[in-house]
Image (cartoon, rainbow, N blue to C red):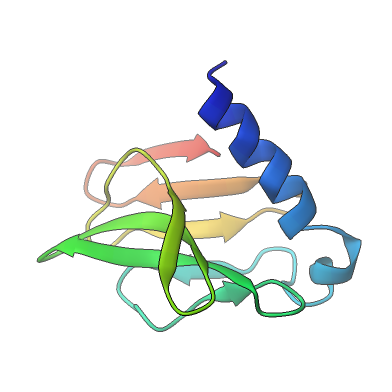
Length: 104
């Protein structure tokens, strides 16, 4: 497991702590095709959403307030991509065209 990957999971453990679970309902989904749709931390310091990297290409990103990307997921998705907060507490990224599914 790489250090960057470990840091991301430690960050998510903080980002999606018990207080924020009331903010982001289990089963909620963010879609790449809706760029203004985000999940924010309880104090709105961080948010998770898709950012466009080129036409019809998006990447899941955690941004600091003001839109500064702090972390981006390694693979890109098309406009059919989605990030889902599962009932188990895990995050899952889907991409309709490639039909891949992975837990982050």
